[in-house]
Every structure is written in C-alpha cells, then in structure tokens.
Image 1 (cartoon, rainbow, N blue to C red):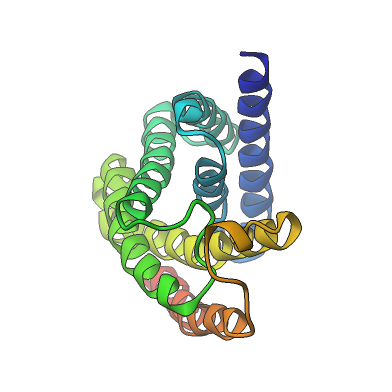
Image 2 (image 1 turned 180 degrees about the vertical axis):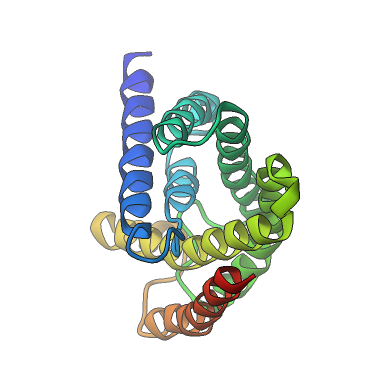
Length: 208
C-alpha cells in the first residue's frame, strides 16, 4: 500500500509541475496554453503502472488539477469541470489504446501514431465539450482553445514520453517494434501542421 501512496503522490506532483510550467509559459503567449502536456503525462503513467492502481492515481490527479486551477484563479465550478475533464480525457485515451490492442508502452511507429491521432482527436473533442460547459456564453471559443491545446499536447508529448521511456528501459524489445528513424519524421508530421493550426486558432480567438 505504501508504494501505491508514494506513486500517487509522484503522479500528482508531476501533473502539478507539468501544469504550472504550461500555465506559466502561457503568460507569454497571450494567455493561451498552446501545448497542454499534463494530460499526456497522466496517460503515460496509466500506461506504465498496473491497472489496479489507476483509481488512486486518477483521484490524486483530480485533486492536484483542482488545486492548480484554483491557484490559477478559476472559480470552483470551472475548476471542478476542468479537473474532471482532464482525468476523463486521460482515462478515455488509455482505455481506447487498450481496446485497440496497443502495447503497454506503444506509439513507436507511424502506423500506431495514425490510430492514436484518431483516438486523441475524438477524445479531446469530448473533454473539450465537458470542460466548456461552465462557460456557455463563450462556449465556442472555450471549446476551441481546450481542443487545440490538449490535442496538440497529446499528439506531441505522449509519443515522446513513450520513446524516452523505451530508450531508457529497453522495453521496446519486449512490447513492440524497435524505435527506428521513422519515429522522428512521424513526430514532425504531427507537430508542424498542428502548430500552424494552433497559431491560427490563437489569432482567431484574439479577434473574436
């Protein structure tokens, strides 16, 4: 039980640090979190830790996210919706990847990235909807901001976390195909068009 508590504290701490870094960086981009990587970190930790421990991690991240949102000045209702949507997004992405039969630390090659892109787009649309329910007057802008930043964060950071983990631990030899040179072009394939789209969405939101 002790190691689960320690892991839960570690997961929550990493989520908090990740969130605070992104929020701090957003102060230099007009207030937009251009790359929300915190949810990708939670998905990654769900992928590498035993499933029986997941409820503890999700609860710890929910309260960590709630604390970060309240610290950032959001009202309680909005903070609760954001925190719920963060956990919902990570859990749905993880369950979808399991359903598709991905290795425990998959996402090494372009074929996996294509399937993951479809999953991430669908799930992020769902989480953006729940997160925006507290701001019905500006629902469209809130939805687009959440969708763009979370989707880009998932597409870029979750494969990176997997590749780094596989490189350090050597798990690619056990769970899936090895990492080859095609991984980096695949990441660029995701990053370049979505980065341009994110820049466009920021300009759109500023003028809307």
